[in-house]
Length: 306
Ligand code: HSE
Image (cartoon, rainbow, N blue to C red; front, side, top):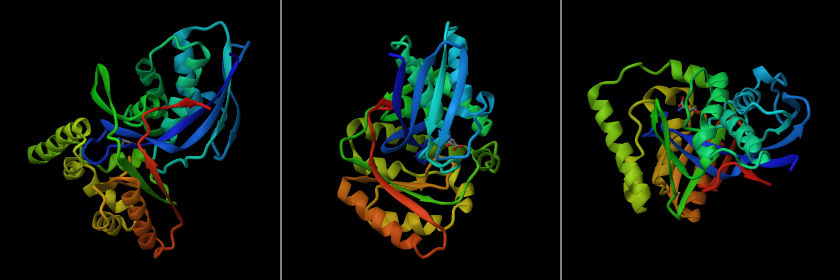
């Protein structure tokens, strides 16, 4: 195989109770990428559509992640990549992670899968570091592994994949404003009170239990964020009214997707998820800010060949 075309999924990180450790993979929202083996060593980005991003390898998220993997593998050849962006940068649904995850999985597939997908995560994190100045893995992990993922530890890195309950759906609203992840991180306090930590880790443990036992009520009760949301919600117009209307319309829970501005809701069943989507659209249409909404199942597969 000399060329591969792949789908690089969008992801929702944090999921309220799991700041920097929890994430899920969306099914039908994502970028496309073509990766080609070439004689000349190194990595070149030959084409980018859908976004105004640098072609220079060392300034591009996919370039940096791909180079990190190529240097590790020490190959006799190089790769060329084309990136077709559909996920907007700064949207909060893992745009940089899709590029970083896509390139490392794509190269690995081209080579006949010499590495396990989990081993690719640190290379993709290099791309996240370029994009946001922090080595978080809560978007790249679900983008690479699919389903829900939990970063159990960063040092050493240990990521656990958790299958999604059958009837779980995600509704996303993406208001067309940009929130820069590094800025959304800089407004968070560096330390949290013990009481806040107790609430957060109780909910995170409960959420993981709810995923394994498919207890939708428990999942909903755990979708609370006392760590980041109180600070970050001020960056997102109408956050409180969207959350209120999502919950009134049957969402299990609602919160900021990654560092925002997208807002996610989880619902049991497609019908409920669509109802939440309609209700949110009606609320946000009253603002002058353009927006998109999506409904998606949680996808058990990460980056995939197309
Ligand atoms: N966990 C990261 C953050 C995700 O919230 O800053 C960024 O998408």
